[in-house]
Image (cartoon, rainbow over all chains, first blue to last red; front, side, top):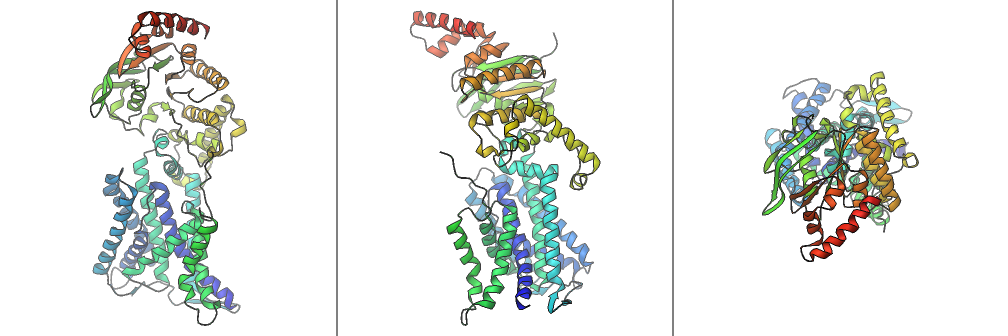
Length: 294
Length: 274
């Protein structure tokens, strides 16, 4: 019972890591740059939703606020690419990476100034509610996190496999030149990928905040999600989710079952797993790179 | 005579101090196979990149089918019915042959996101149509054996054919082929020659190609333009261009007029054999 309880709360955490990792991978596949502000995008998404729904701010309906937050983050993501990154095309990826690190700092400062530097809790209709099943006590928020993540993943899967826009995104990420000459507006498509990644970040942020409080430094969770993306192979969307789930599960389980005096192992477990995966499968678990033919 | 399908007037493209294309005027008539030949660095690929709107010429005009091509961006060019292949093959590596060809249908897809996600009857019908169009290309190019293979595992010659197939899947009016025979074996080059003939005669697609293999050029082209250092040397039938003194000079250098004359005869007989 204890074990199942831990697994479920681990899965819920893992879903949040997985969704942030998904944002990393989306951007990486589309632009070959890593957005180190992805965790901060998630934090801003949570704060935007909080601004819409919390009674001290606008006090709107919670579900409506999620949709609004997704919209706001989509617009922000699009504008970030359109207004800044598009003018840097042709620059080295290092400068883009450093830019995103700087943007992360700015976002943390903005969130602190607008909302608060202290932890604030997101008002949800299901806060503190529990479901008892057998001997299990499950938080409604944990169940919801898992359900929402499954739905979002399914939606993204359908989007990428069936829609013209989704296929165009895949095409543009594999070969920009060829995509242009198939009639795909590559630059606009890239901005749309940023918008999509902003939406995913908003969902991740809301789910994260529903488990407790949010503060401007919550975005540093992005580091753990980065490890999740690397475990999954950094080019694979399912890999990012699985990597997130692995990290989510390993944390509570290693804390619980570590020998006495080693409980702190939970903190390093995600990175230990990352190192092990990189040694035995350097391309990640869902590697898409193939060995070069000679 | 009706207006040409493609009309390039006085096009000039500079890269810094280098004039890659210098005041080139040419036209391609509907239904013909037109070849651009010339030594490396003559400006042939630059002409292609101008047509794909990868570059904007410093001077000159380009009209396609009565429309000003220079007003469009490179992702809008395919919608006019221009498709191209690349000298170095640009395919979607992590996708199958079938998927690559289906991306070629991009400009013909007209469904919206919701009907696609829920796969409504109209989206399903369209998907069926696209699949049908792609299967015709697969039959035409004998790609059945590779339909579900990943591009990254395919040999060079097959990739070349897949890229041709993807261009055909867009159902173009004008097909730009950038060195279709480079890197192909003798048999593969013969296949390519047959396909280009069929593309012209059965499908009614106009072809503009850059090619070094004079055997292939003589076998399939109606007209040829020779370029050197960005300038036109000669335009005419393959035999006319090959025997043109300026062309011979560009290929063989200026020294030894006697020698040039001899090679001229040889080339002619070669052309006739092909």
